[in-house]
Image (tube, rainbow, N blue to C red; front, side, top):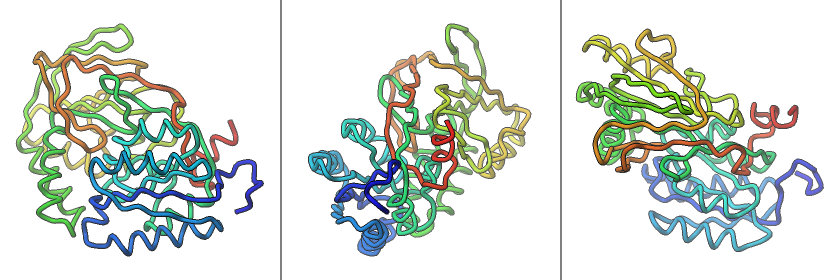
Length: 316
């Protein structure tokens, strides 16, 4: 891609931080994944440096990558890895790249980064910079989705399945979803949505950064500047099983036990000091009440040139 393209994020180098414990590399393909990424990014004619790290080393590796003023910083990992790294990515003050190596890859997929690691890398090399919204939970940024009740259980079960079935991620995800549906119970919450108070009984609540269309958990925009709150309130075991199946198929918006609302800020009170919350696939214990907000256009990131976000950005 030519360096004088006005839309191009092209720099002399790509500095890639690869999570060596992501879903794809956990299956024992770390070297092959790194080589795919290298080949895809090198198609832009730039140098490529890849550092494979784990856990807390990821933040340090991102700082080293960002210290190179001529590099595009790229993070390759799952949704949780990318979510934890958002503060570091935002501090680069330039368009960064993400490659999805997890199970769902919600953020990378909505940026148009789909396919194998090599295919994603080629799309990134040809991509365009866009500004996107982030959301926050108790002041900490996240890129896609935060939930509790069923979703808190789901995060714990998914981690167990990742260890038990490292080479069968989708099967593990389905088993985790089924076990969580069986074990979850309804709870009462008090919510404040932009100053309007409401009380609901649900067995799962999701707060998302912009609106998911439902099939298959996709967003056509990351610049709407609003949160969506989705409440799942089945009344019986059969309702819960039906809804769990609807969630897996991405058909949950058609379910009669689903209620939605939109807001700029949301406070959710579950009546206890701490709550287990799954945010971008990672489980944390959050202080109650839980405060959500949106940060419009707060991250510059590279989207696939022919993807919906890039096209909307140019037309806007």
